[in-house]
Length: 384
Ligand code: ATP
Ligand code: MG
Image 1 (cartoon, rainbow, N blue to C red):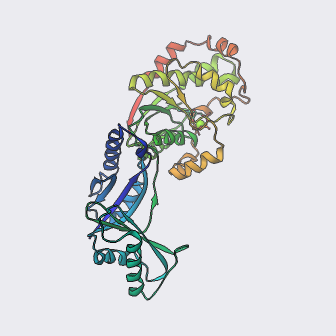
Image 2 (image 1 turned 30 degrees about the horizontal axis):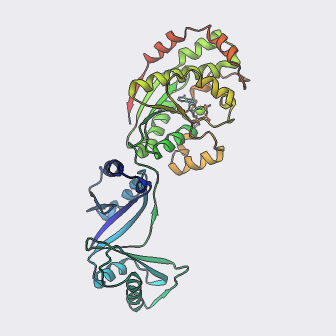
Image 3 (image 1 turned 180 degrees about the horizontal axis):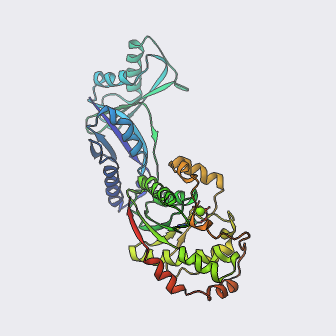
């Protein structure tokens, strides 16, 4: 009898001819997720297994595996021979000594001498005889013992289905460049795109020395949290201090954010093309703040020439975003109080529905190309 972890995948089932491509990416990602722990990953009839791990690593392994997109459910199981004596030995280890239970059986091997109902009856009977205070309750049991008789002559005996991340394996849906601020929204946006199989690299704009090094550390920490789901991510940082100073000096203060965002999007598109990213991802949500009205989005979007800008949070309420942020483990870091570059030179009243004409008029006062070039001279790549 061997203790194993079973990982079942989700939407990959829907894939037809190119299922192999998705399966390979999923397996690679599983291996990468657990590479620092002594164990073996393999695959058998559409399920993935982690084997040969130490008992002490079980929780850590589950924690890591739960974050691999493509995984639907996970179970800690005993793999045994299929005879009832062996299955019973495993079931005893999973069973509590009192309370109510039921047995659920599944028979992948249709040649097996007992039907699934007979397996459940036999095993239930043995457990009742062994643990005298145990009772059967098929409707609301305290715990369930599950038996799966597989085609390859082994039985898997387990208690629970642990819910995993779902989605598609990262690496199967291209690459995006996430505009990662230090806030709540953008890490969630990156998480959502990774869930659909996208590789995500990050770009952060800072206003050093107006923003401090702690703000940078915070963004690195957020990228680290995100990278647990994205199978590794690269973080690029660019300074926009000189751009904010130029806008502050020459343009109407209420357009500071609008103009800065247009610079951010231009820099983002150029950088995305450089690193082979096929889209820009942001954490914008309609109407959340002045720059995220449809007019604000139109103004920033209009400087992007060839790539789509994906805004996975566009229709979400703040509390829905917070819920996801908590669930992905980013919230506590996101709410640390370090300043984002957008808060430097913040006007008292930002323009809520900026007119393109006026924006262009103000922008014409600036050396747009020169400022962008200067920004690229400050680019840093941080390996996460
Ligand atoms: P977040 O919680 O992600 O910071 P927010 O609610 O603060 O978002 P904004 O500041 O208007 O909203 O930013 C909207 C989006 O623009 C962010 O989700 C992010 O994708 C991008 N963005 C804003 N500031 C930065 C920055 N300093 N670096 C990189 N991207 C940024
Ligand atoms: Mg922000």
